[in-house]
Length: 236
Image (cartoon, rainbow, N blue to C red; front, side):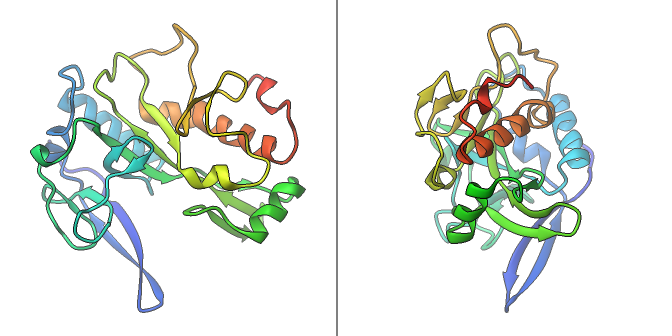
């Protein structure tokens, strides 16, 4: 596979943010693919689209709703000269992970303004959810960045990828329970229900899912937590 745009991992070092850049090793990433229909060419398309539309997201390994943690230091696994921890460099072998481990993306959704969501803003000011980012920008005011894990399971691309919230978001007051619910479009364990029967097309990519479905789900969930109990009844 040819080299593509670099991925960037930010971290704190001596009180300041530094960025580590690397070209993703797609040959190593494809070793973790569990379906023959998910070809090397399809992976290149997926990564190229994500690099264009979600350049801060990282190709990694996921287990359920979480990213796979390095056994040495707990860091994020990325594909840099194989699969290895972005912090300590420890390598992860294909045979060392469980069958529940899938190739996945981890990142933050685009900022969502919360100045108009009074209850939610107060809750976030009192205690931000773990691994969620609250900030302020001139053009949108106070905003929230919501982290998600989007995973390629063993039936991809015949069936849609799974997109999951991290557990922390459900600790925000006003959120619905983290259980299976048709009313809140959730499968349970943080997984979004994004497609009705027959809506998924194998030509769609993770980038399509995040842009066209997942972002709208995040907005509805935040509105629900703000007290708008009909948020999921609105078609978008």
